[in-house]
Picture 1 (tube, one colour):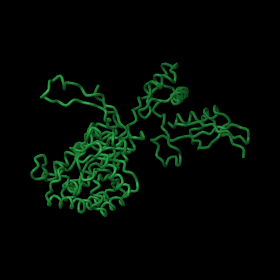
Picture 2 (cartoon, rainbow, N blue to C red):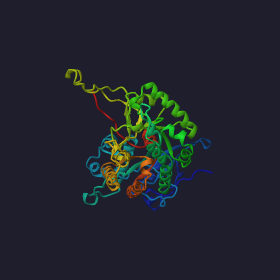
Picture 3 (cartoon, helix red, strand yellow):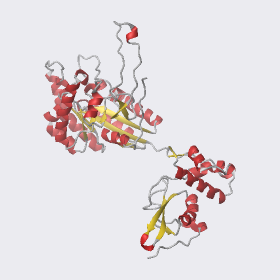
Picture 4 (cartoon, rainbow, N blue to C red):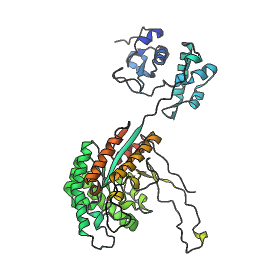
Amino acid sequence: MEPTTPTLSVHTMTASPYTIGTTFPTIQDARDAVLRYTVDQKLSYRIVKSDATRRKKKLVIVSVYRPHTCPPETHENWKMASSMQYVVPRLARSFHANPTLKAADIQELELLGGRRLKYHQAWRARKQLETFLQNNNIEDTILPDVEEPPQRKRVLVGYGIDVDAVSNWINTGDGSPPNPINVSRGVYGATVGVDRLLKLLEKYNIKATWFTPTHTIESFPKQMVKIRDAGHEIGLHGYTHEHVSDLSDEQQRSVLKRSMEIFTKLTGQIPMGYTAPGWKTSKGLIRILEEHGIIYDHSFMHHDFQPYYVPDSNSQWVETNTANAPESWMAPMTRLRPSTIVEIPANWHLDDWPPLQPNPGTAAQQGFVDTQVVERLWKEQFDYAYREYTTFIFPMTIHPEVSGKPHVLLMHERIIEHINQHEGVEWVPFGDMAKEFREGRFPGVTIEGGV
C-alpha cells in the first residue's frame, strides 16, 4: 500500500493533530505541516527519517508528543516527551526585538527541566519563534510573561530498621558477661518488636531496609524469613554489633566475609547496603566496603537530607595532642575525594534509640522522652527539608526493641500520616535511594573540603 500524503493545509491543522505514523514525502513537508499546530497547541514534536527501501523511497515519520501538562486521557496512547511550550512565550519579546537571535544564543538563555538546551532543541525553539511571530500580532499588552513551570517535588522516605536483638547486649567488647535482663530485651525486639513493625509497614504499604547483625540472622531465622518474604531489603550490620572502630582492617574483612556468606544464603543475593554498628567507623571502612562490592553505606553524616558519594579513605587529618608542640598538630585536613560508595546519611536526630531506649547506668541514654517531643522533632526536620528542597531523602533509623513498644508505634503512625499528606512522597528502601542516585535519576550533593 502506497503511503498517503495528508491533504490538510497548515492553516486547518488546529482542528485535530496528526497521529503517530503519519507520513510525508519530505522532511520539509513534515515540518511545514506540523510546526504551526505544535506551536498553537503547545506540543513538542520529533521528525524521524524512515527509509522504505522496497519502494525506493525515503519517507518521514512524524511523532507528536503531548506535554506533561496534558492529561493522559486527552490524547490516549501518545508518547511522553519534554515539551518546549515554555520557550516560545518567554523568548518572544526578545526575539521580536532582535531577529538575529541564533540557536546558540537561545542555548545560553534557556533551560529545560533545569538543564541547558541541546543545540537541536535550541534550533527548534528558534523555528517555533519565527512561526509564532509570523502568525501572531505581537504586542506587549497581549503577551504576558509566562511563569516558570513549577518544579515537581520528589521525596524519597524510608525506614532503616536495626534488628540488633541480642547481639547489641552481648557485644561487651572484653568478653565480660552481659546482664541477662538486657538479653531478654533483645529477644523481645527480635520477636515481638519485629512482628509489630512488620504489621505497621504492611498497614501503610511501606518497604523498609532491615539492617541486621549476622548473629540475629543465625539466632532468629524464622523472623528473618518473615522479613525477607514480606519483600523488604536486608542490609549488613556487623556480626554481634561489634564496633568497627575497635577492629583492625583484617578483623573487619573477616566479619564482612562471614556476614555476606550468611546473607547470601538467606536472600539469594549479595547485600547492597551496610550500616556500622553504633555508627562507629574506621579510617579503612570505605575502602573495605569497596573491596567487597557494597553499593551504599548508612553511617556517615556529611549531609542529612541528600545522597552523596562518601569520601574515600585517603583524606588525612592531624589529631590535637597538647602534650606536643602546637606546630606538630596545627595543620588542615587533606582534600576530600569521593569514593564509589553512595552514602544514605545517618542522623542521630532521626534515631529512636537515644531518646526512647532506657539504659540504666548509662548517662548518655535518656529513654523516657515523651513521644510527642520526638514526633515534633522528626516532623519539623521533614517540614524544613520539604520547604527548602525540591528533591531530598528522609532516612529514619529505628529499632524493633524501641519502636516495637506501643507508645512508639502510635508515634510512627502519626509521623507516617503527616508525611503522606505531602505531594511527591515515595516510601522506598535505602537500596532504592542509592540506586536512583547512582543511575542519575535522583540528584544529590558533592561533599567538598580539605586542601
